Every structure is written in structure tokens, then in C-alpha cells.
Image 1 (cartoon, helix red, strand yellow):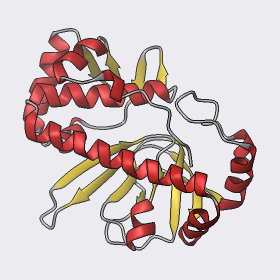
Image 2 (cartoon, helix red, strand yellow; image 1 turned 120 degrees about the vertical axis):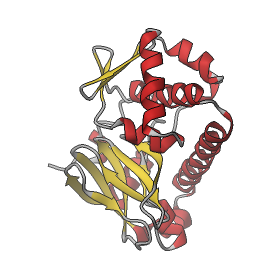
Image 3 (cartoon, one colour; image 1 turned 90 degrees about the vertical axis):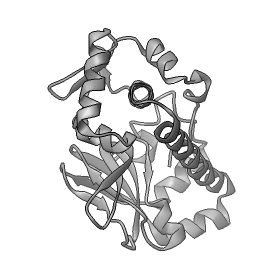
Length: 243
């Protein structure tokens, strides 16, 4: 059964800003339905003109861009609350792909309705703009990592980002994140070879900072990883809007 917006399981999480009653009513009209997909399912495809936008209700996925020779740059790990497809809504076609890594449940919106949102619901339009600006900020941080951080600093930065987001979304069970991704996915995110990624993760494991085995990830000392990555923790924890 689809969730009514009043009963959305993400609304109870502290990481998201509260909806007003007007916003709840609008979102119930804006939402066109829900979609369930399995692991490996393409949700959005680079170069395609998707008629739909999505908010992730549950499950994990990958955003990535592929070069003509098949090389891949992972842009980000997709988690609950992420708003997908805005690029195609504004620019006409997707500049990257999104694929499910686990079973996923998505809220579905019609792309054509985005202009009604901007015309008649300025608060919600501001939220969409905030989401786009935050994604731009994250891409800047990612570029800084790839261009300036060492391998161990990059991996520390990436793991803190993943772990912090997972904690905010209540995905940690017994201090463990069920993590379906491969080391190759992390390597493709941070611009490293698989061999370099594997060796660097082994160093972090030896130092008692990280454990990653059998699709389970544990960060044992997040503050040490933050120091290693030269991170400012004040930039991580912010309430964000939910579409």
C-alpha cells in the first residue's frame, strides 16, 4: 500500500524539516504514486528525458556517469530522502544515471508538474532550489577530495559522509550499516584504483577505524576519520527539506 504523505516514514526523522499542513496537502496532490524496484534496476538513464521525478522512501542506489569507453565516475550514493531527476526536469535530459543497489521504494512525481510547484508554491520551490544548491556544494567537496586529498584522506572523507548520512536516516543497526556496495564503487567515487582502495581500507582496518566485511560497514572512530580527512563537522549536520 502506498504511504499517504501524512504517514511518510521519513517525516519522523530529525534530519528533515517539518512539513506544514499546507505542504502536506500539496505533496499529496503532487505525488503521482509509488514505485518498487529491485537491485540493478535503472531508475534514471543518462541522456534520457524521464517524464518522472522520484524521492527515495527506502533502499540504496548509485548515481554515476559513464564515459564512451565504459569508465565510470560514481557521483554519490543514493539514500532515503534523496530527490532524483531534477536535472532532467530543468535541463530536458539526464546528465547521469541512477541505479538501485538494493530493493528500493520510490515516491513518483510527474516532471510536468514541477512548474506548477514553482508558480504556485514558493516555499516548496525554495526547497527544490535548496536541494540543488546543496548537491552543487557536495560536488564541490567531492572535487576537492579527488583533486587535493591523499588516498587515505579521500577514503576517510567518503566513509564519514556515508556513515553520517546513514546515522541521520536511522539506517544503523547495532552500530552497523548494511552496505551493499563494492570496494569498486567506492574507488569509482573517489578517483582511485581498486588496488589502492583495498590497500588503504586495510590500513584503516589495522588502525581500528573501520570494519567492512560481508556487506556490512562499521566506522569505529568517526572523529579520527574526520581529523584524517581534514573535515569541518559543522558542514555535515544540517536539517534539510524533504520532497
